[in-house]
Image (tube, rainbow over all chains, first blue to last red):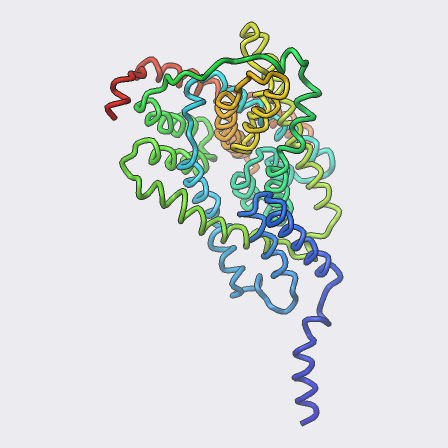
Length: 379
Length: 46
């Protein structure tokens, strides 16, 4: 009898006795992510489920990420299969207006320059001793695009998924903090004051409908390995622009995106088990991710300066900073910074063009990267 | 393949490939706008 009572009591304290030293630390990390999401409004849609998932997975003996555990089932169904990031991309496509980009197509190039940090960071990760596929996954944090980072990492370096995803989403939300100093450092006051004038509406409805089809076919032919990413974002955009399937468009940008965001967030959080997450490697990944996004901003601004010279002073280099994929935060940052130096400046729509270019650019960069890997026989 | 070759290839072909692809797409977008020009009246009717 006493033995049975003892065993029963042990069952109630087993959770405490099985705590690994890393679990309480990760619970605090989860709480911090919740704080950032709830109190600071940093990407709350993702940081809240990620933070909670992190807490759940660090409570021992619950077996949530073991075979049959509910988080493991969600993770296997949507992250391992890459379904969640792709479904989110349909929603992103349905929410994105490529109009400002179509008004001034040459701004598309800023969306390419805004991805250069990915490749530079990849090289640095190799120097620091990461394997080729790990370096690719770390570099992709620079895409400043959560679903793309998750898609690539879950496929080629799933053990880094927690660190890469947390870095991607946290830094995305910190764009208003770290972009302005870089923009200021790399541009002169005269450049920051350049007025680009108003954006004229010049893209027809037909152009907007044909655009996603062209991007899908041409982009897919150039980089077939990235077609799932490119195809889903462009499907969402086609549905939005054609106007014939408004129910599907609304479902993609609301119900589907919301449900998938919840499931994706909680399953990403579930990869943050202290025993595998709390390593020096994670800190290096977080540092490299930050560097990648800073380099993206710098490359975008420098390319903006080049375009300014080539167009005879018609491009405000600040819009280059919006060539990353953090939509629409970085466009808003550009608008705010531009108005600081010239209150009559209205850069928002130009920056939105660069920002949507950055969205396509980040997907294209990932697609190009995967296709090169395939070409070299690494994947 | 050693890391050095891999890194340089990724930088050159990756950055070049991304830039080239977006350049092609921007040129196609300019062509698209010429083929399907914006007409104020038609847009209003829609």
